[in-house]
Every structure is written in structure tokens, then in C-alpha cells.
Length: 246
Image: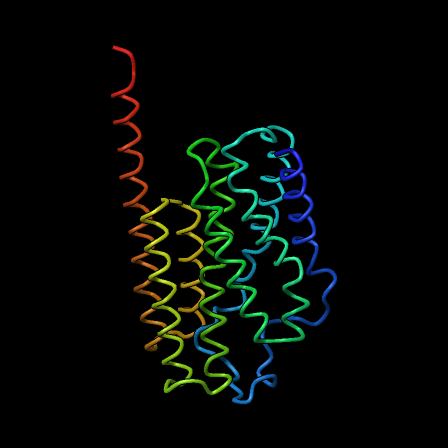
């Protein structure tokens, strides 16, 4: 357990440091695609990506706390292997994204799946130390993975849809994943991260079909997140009251 805890911390640090070692990456370059789309409608406005600063810092705090205070905790350890996979792949992701759009898309889905497995394994204890940062990370990856598809598929001229059609399809996919995750593991920060990305799409598109759909999706995700959290808290209070000594 201690080795996995330390490896999680090391990979979190390398993941957070990776932007300093890759020059010139500012998102997918339209000139890299056979079909050039200057402003993909599915891509959130630039300010939305500032969430990465919070994600990096919170993941580092989580991993450090895990080493110092939870290195032998089996509940924490259940999250570490999928996190190690996600963070390990994430460390190299920017370098891959500069070289290959296809592999960047494949790898971000590997990051997402493993991050979601980590989130689903988070225990009820230490919510702000563990589930919150993992949820924030997994939530943003949910949006980013679907955005990647919504950019790459029309960029390579795949399928019958244009940029708007693929943008809507990507948003629907993100919404489906989000609903499934929130039903399985209520997480305030997961919902916040997805809603943050959706609002970024609204800002990017304004009053348009994609912007309107993203706005509705953001409201739905926020409402479902709060509803699931209320249900979870009510269930916990009931269980604690039932199990409390009379």
C-alpha cells in the first residue's frame, strides 16, 4: 500500500509538471485536420481550462495526504491503481497531443475510464481529501474526452454530421456518462466540473443550437448533482440513526 501511495504522489507531481515541459500546445490545431474547423462549437471558451490549476493543486494535496496519513488505508488504496494508470497516461498526454491527434484522443479516454474507476471506489470517509479532488478531475475529463471526439470526428470528415451535429452528439454522450456516474457515486465536484465545462461551451457559442443545448445540459447536471447529494445525505442520516445504539 505504501508503495502505491508514494507512486500516486510521484505521478501526480509529474502530471502537474507536464505542461512546463511541452511548448506550444494550446489545444488541437485546426491545420492538423484534413477538414479545418477554426472554432469547433463543442470546445469550451478558453477561460474554462483554468480549472486545471485547481485540479493539479487538489490532486497534489490529496496524494500528499494519502502518503502522510492514509498510506495503510485499504479504502484509499482501492482508488490508487486506477489513479496511477490515469495520472501515468496523463503525464505523457500533452507530448502525445502535439504529435498525434488520434492517439491523444485514445489516451484521454484511457485517462477518463481509469479516473472514473477511481471515483467509483472512493470511500465515504475523507470526502474533501479524496472524493472531491478525484471527482473534479474525473468530471473535467468526462467533458474533455467527449469534446475531443466532437473535434476529431468532424475534423477527419468522419460520419454524416458536420461540426454542429458532432458537437451535439458529444454533449449528449457527456450527459449520458455524467448521469450514470452521478447515479453510481454522488459527487458534488464531479457535477461542478462537468457543469463548468458546459457553461464554457455556452460562452463559446452564445445563442445558438449548441449553446442552448449546453445551457440546458448544465442546468440539468447541476440539478441532478444536488438531488443525488440530498438523497445520499438522507440515506446516510437514516443509516446512522438506525445503527446508533438506543
